[in-house]
Image (cartoon, rainbow, N blue to C red):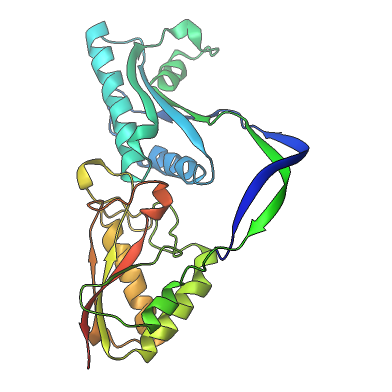
Length: 284
C-alpha cells in the first residue's frame, strides 16, 4: 500500500455488524472403514475450497459409527474417521490451530435418524460431522479519517531494478496463491507480469525460485488439489518458473525448488502460500 490511513476517533457516523452462520458438512464411510471414499473426498475438498474467504474461529470434527459392533471398537473406528478428516484439512493448507475438536463419538442409535430402511440408517450413521464456526460478529465503525503520508514501500519490480548481490532474498509478497493450488490469484497477475518484464531485461541476474506452503503438519508438503500430488510448494515454484520462461526469461538463469513449510513467516497464512527468489549470481 502506498499510504497508511490512520483512523482517528473524531466523529462516529454509523456502525455495521457482519455475521455468518456455522457451516456444516458430513462425510460418509463404508462399513468398518476409515479411509475416505473418493466421491466423499471430492465433496470434502469442494467444501474446503469454499472456506478460503471465511474468517474461521474454529473447526470441530466428530466421528460416528453405526450401531453394529462393540462399543470399544466403535469408539476406536469413529476416532480414526475423525483423524482421517483432520489429515485432509492439514494436507490442504487449513491450519491445525483452527481445529478445536477431533473426537470419536462411537455409535449412533437407529432411532436418531428419521428413516425406516435400516440399511440406509446405518449408512447415514457411518460418518464424520464437520462444524466450521466463523469468528464472532465484527463491528465495523465508520469514522472520519485523516490521511497520513507514509514512505512508499518499494514494489518487487522496483527492487529487482536496483542493486542486487548474491544471497539477496526477494519475497513476492503481492503474489498470492489460491489455497491448495499452484495457480496465483487473479489480482496478482498484473504484478507478476511486471516482475517478469524486469527479469527479462536483467540478463545479468541468475536466481532460484523457492516455493512455500502454509499450515501443513511437520513441515510436510501440502497436496496439490489439481494433481493430487504432495508437492504443492514445488508446484508453485515451477508455476512461476514456467511463467517467467514463457515471458522470455532464459531458463539457464533460473532454477526452482519447493521448501514445503520449513520457513513460515507468521501472521496471516495467506502470506506463507508464497514464492520468493534468491539471487545466485550477478554479472559484472
